[in-house]
Amino acid sequence: MAAATAAAAMTVLAIVAQDHVALRAAPSASATAHAQLWQGELLEVRGKHFGQLQVYDHRLERAGYVRENEARIIGTTEADAPQLLAVLRFLRDAPGAESLGIAYAAAYLKAAPAAGITAEPFDALGTMAERLARGATLRQGKVETASAHMDVAAQYGIKFVSYDTPGAGGSGAVQLCYDGDAFRHVLAMDGAGGSAKATLEQRARAILALSRQECVDPSLSPHDRKGVDQQRADLLDRIDSASIAQVEEPLRNRLHLRRAGAWAAVAFDKSRFQEAPQPAAQRAFDELAAVDKAELTSEDAADYTEAAIRVGAVRWAAATALAAPARLQVQLQPKEPGQTCVRLIDSWTKNPSTLAERCTYGTVWAASAKSMPDGRALALTVQPMDGWSELWVWHQEPDGWKVDVVVPEANGPGLGYVEWAGWSPSSRRKLLVVREAKSNGHVTRRFEVLRTDTLVAEKSAGDPQQLTAFGLWADVSWRQETVSLR
Image 1 (cartoon, rainbow, N blue to C red):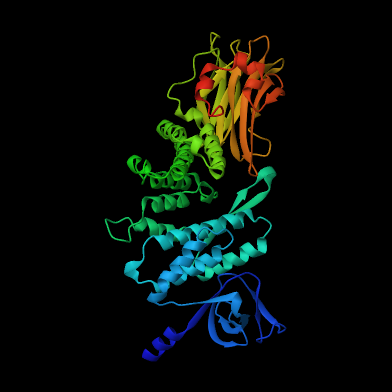
Image 2 (cartoon, rainbow, N blue to C red):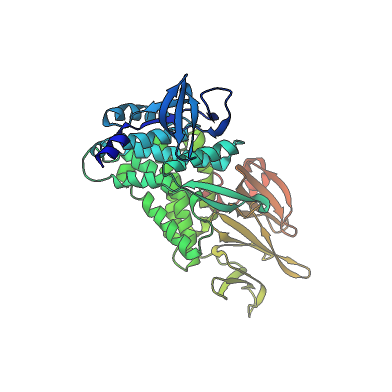
């Protein structure tokens, strides 16, 4: 046993410092290459020959030679820990060097005494692993490199999960996510006192990483999804109001944005189980309003737009009152489990009868019902899924009542909302709507004037001030409550 321990202590290790390093059969540049190595690969050094390191790759189970300048020999004793930590700090925020940084993080955690390890290496490890997963999801034309770097990271116990997500036009996409183990270590270091206690900023970064909307399994059942969304919201609330005020501005904005999206999801989840969604929806609005837009970074601007769309989709969940009395009204009636049928009635008739009926498994926001003053059309918001709401428009035709669905954008469902913004005078028969959606990373927001009979857009613009109809007929309450005018 003593001999084995001494032999292990004498083992010399090296980390591959760059990509596309050839592992050759002999110490010669012309020798046959056994394999191609990538940055971060861990090698056992067994000798030196003519400027070459004789090494063994335990992951590939291959021996060979690499040039000395293509790998870095590292120490794994307590005396080596400060130097390893210095390199880790340098690589932590170096895009493209994630697998190399993960290798140094692993080396530091092995070398440093357990009592002296703080949250810093776990924070760095998680940050690099998460960035590696994000880059692999985006691919950026470097599929081979991203895949190889993830294989190297797996050598150090880093785990990734993948989800199949629906794409625009029905095309599929793969979402890669880091499983978050290092960040859970950070959150575990929140005990009283001691050098191991995580800082507020480290805890905030960990919470953000563990609450990513895109890393929620899309195949979860509604019941399981409800539990996961509530866990995300509760996790984000682990930083209280007093503490969040002490966080630097960009990080504070990110927390508010993530909370807005999480509570919007909770509001929708609650509506599916006949629980009151108003408190959660109002919380989502409050968190979005707390964002300091003047301090948003260019990277956070896209997240702000996404959070606003998610909040916009559940806007009517925050309403506490039913729709104002009008000639046309809707009545909701449950049918099969999870299904709601919407009956359109004329309340001015002596014995109101059903003019039309349509059923859905989505959430019907009854408070959103908006009747045209002369009773010839009615608009109603229906939300079939988290982050996506549609507008049902009933309109009277010579052959009876018809209902058409106005969607945020044609390639959905995805992320988006469409909402009623006002009616024109009855003689004009126009409907004002706003649509906002995100598809394939591109956001569109259009203010439109539709004909009530065909729902064809007669005019549209990116700014309502460019449309005379919005200046004349836009509803006052819509202007006060919509997130589209943010």
